[in-house]
Length: 279
Length: 265
Image (cartoon, rainbow over the protein chains, first blue to last red):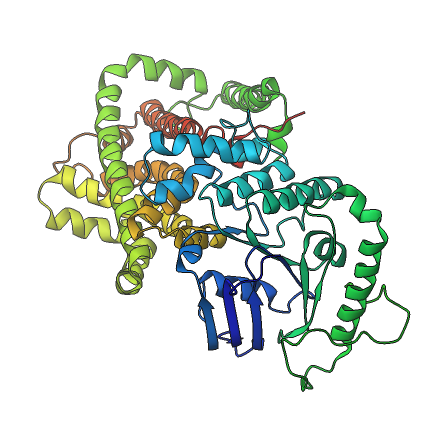
């Protein structure tokens, strides 16, 4: 990993919904350049909210989110949990959308659209409509659309959660490769321990709502990831650690968040039941 | 949903068979009971009357259809434009929507006499009456369509810096299209009903002779078969309008919308 100034600095950010529910509580986080940061936490811990705040789709109630590199901020890709395609538009037009909105003509954008579609392995499906594709293929279209702007930063909100395992494994490998090849910075929200470890160069564990950073753990593994990593000792060890961290996060009483947030690692509890707390 | 999995031949056969049975029973009853035509004419007599009185009925049909078409077009355009205005500014919506509802819930027969009284040019009065019943489904459906756009897509457009116009043109309008077309399908039939009701209210008082006028006239003259023939033409026109609008919607939504896709094997 190249050590440099963080791409995004999140400082003491809190977010309350209009209903008064606190989604995030004084959360701090640095996104380092070139990393694939897995944000891991239980459902409803505010990780999607955090991603929306980073993207600028919502404003924090307090605290600050700073992009050190505004060029990166302007070249941002976002992938939602659902493919979020326009059903009335063909694959190529869905992928073209960001360029079209930026005022680029069809002629200019044509090559980049073709490239992006090829990158995600959907060559030949340019003229298809979303409903004619499988769930995994739709997600690839969504990915191609995020890549077409040649982003520096990719924000992904549980993009593979609704896919079957085989499709998910393939897309995870593809994403790992894209991350490596295009030197992307990726923030990847997930509630799966295994996914967070397989993909992430770093895993940040969030507490249940209101979300705070409980722990951060680097994952050592081949770059880009290969399927063999899934059965390696390093992977399994990391999964056990992260599971334990998550379990610890789940056990903490919600009102008691005294430890300094954002610090590296709370030591996992001594209990050997490392597989707990993936819910 | 069941019709989507049926074989096409059944889709035509089943209702056709029911229709034939009903018509046969009707004709049989009229004959065996010896019901005179001025009480209840049989379907064969009605069919003959449609043919023999075509010279009077057809021009009347055209007049009614002209009013219907004009009211429908105004409803479609105005419904769409108002819906866009409503969704662009909550102020406009809050200010105007209650009145749209009031127009919709007030019975046409109650206000048609006033409209016909105020507006001297009868075709325009009829048009306004028909429009009053026809435009609300377009308006409310389109507003619903424009406001129920996928939230994530709205976010995506924001993220990529879409202007208000771009979001409307490339996101909200296409997303609202199925709703708009659904509104049109309801509105087409209502425009016809509105036109006929208004013609009834206008009666013989100087109105151009639309089909409703023919029904009234035939009623006064106890030409019941012609009355039935006129009613039949109105229903047929309604079915035709629905079929045309359904075809239009199929053409427009084509490959992308679930409602227009037949179940696959």
